[in-house]
Image 1 (cartoon, rainbow, N blue to C red):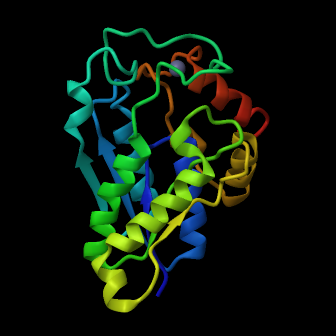
Image 2 (cartoon, rainbow, N blue to C red):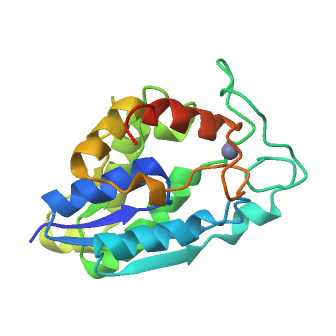
Length: 216
Ligand SMILES: [Zn+2]
């Protein structure tokens, strides 16, 4: 049986991934992270998406380390302002959370290994993402690393897979796929500020609006 654990933030990319996995895998699990994000409200959306999608089990994992990093990321330190407007072109944005995808994949792999789930899904898209831990080379090496550390893998000789089907896609292409799959985009949430309704001005609000133009 094909089984997968999906990293689910509550945003549109991971929601599209979840719906894609519902189609392509027999058993789907979800994991969401409470890491001190100022838009912690996204967890409410993630749980609701998991419920609608009918995931077998939804884990919510606390990641306290980011709360103790001061002056590093505007996503986890409320004393830093979230910028308005598009992402900067040539430097990592102030909303970068150091090693976030590595930390999340490491924690997810503990669950996957324990439950003998050999696929971990992550909704990163590399073409228009400014974050280094969304690049294909990171995903490839994370997969090798998880496989080499896995008890399940060493027992069964099966590889652990990091399933990242949106690598090489733009957010717009992810949105169009989501439309085809019937993703309830109105139940997804992305705003960095964590306001309801979303601010409409932060980089992720703008990127989301652009991607969903004509889709909703
Ligand atoms: Zn916003």
